Image (cartoon, rainbow, N blue to C red):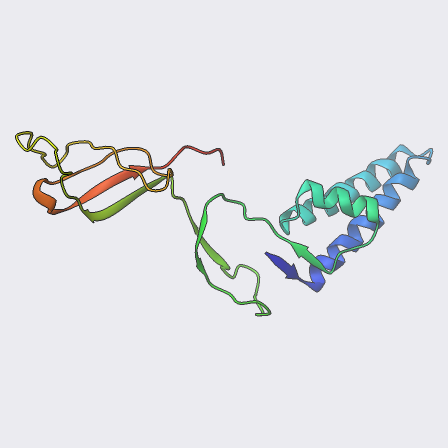
Length: 163
């Protein structure tokens, strides 16, 4: 998500000033001066991280030496956007929820399952029996199936992904 904040622009400027100060302090004979400027640089970098800037974005800022007015903020969690709570151009306050992100590694579905033609009708399926279920290759494990096409719940496990 791209976001504009005058406070974020100021935080980037502060970081660049602290970065310049830390580089100039390296030449200083006063070790206290070097330590203080490095501390200011680290504190300014921490503020950028709190704002949601990544290490890569901070490295780009260091190279360009120009604060960005609009910064892309990455989600701190992996998943699928289930609900968007804001619109483009909307004003938001600190702490305002922007999106609801959900994980699809494990879901429950409610389905009507029917026996296939030619399936052994003497083999009665019972609730709790495991069956292979798939949906476009995403879901891979089985769940509950009831005989005769009666509605039933199925628990599906998605592929395990890092994050």
